[in-house]
Length: 198
Image: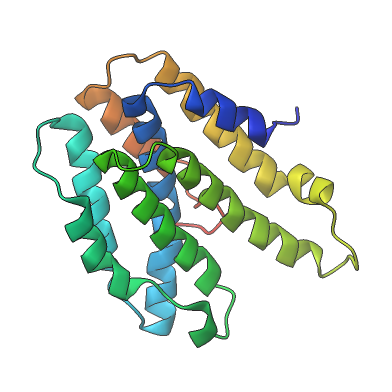
């Protein structure tokens, strides 16, 4: 069955903000190993800064009145955002997408951008799209949007997001158990969004 990415966006928009937040946090958790691997390979950046910020976001969803300053978090993250010009390797793209997705997530949690959680979803898809394009370009001179969308990795991304949306829509109250189950789901398949084994 072919999953439609744009219908995921519409369904995500129709959820309550705290439900959108949970889906977006799960997507960033699934992307984070891409960044950590990049740090390991290039010795760039401090992955712990991103890990700590994401931990706070998870905690915030359980402890609603947790003191949280998105700007402070982003100030710590910003020096760890890679510049694609500085690296002659493909891994910089998913690493950058991860950092930007975490930034969007922080903006969403802070309530400063109502499209932020959708942006997280789009950044995760963009990461997958770049990997798929790179893979397809080996055998194809011309790559169409349809080829990218029908690729198994992109289909899997769409299915994963659709599953999260479906699950959270059945959980109007996001309690500790729900948050824990989503956090476990993020990497339960043993791969990141772009298919890297963790």
